[in-house]
Image (cartoon, rainbow, N blue to C red):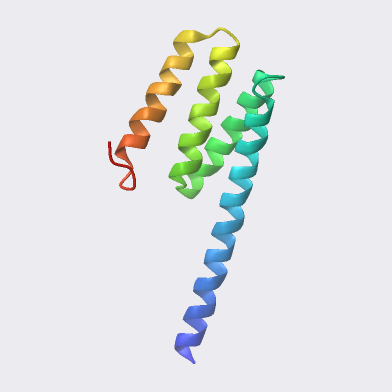
Length: 101
């Protein structure tokens, strides 16, 4: 019975984590869609996604939102800021244990 309780608790936690990462991915998808039409709004959504991803420890969500923010910065002619975000995205992607460069 104890094992069943632990198993069900784990399933519950995994379900919550999946929902949270889906919400982060949805924010990033929306931000990416807005990059050409409204880069400032895209940046706001990406920053919200990044904050949530950071709270959840969701590295892919953080990296993607950082990249989107860099693209948005570039599109509004903030090239120096764009470069900072691109450098951050590259650095975090090469530090990931799942990616080898």
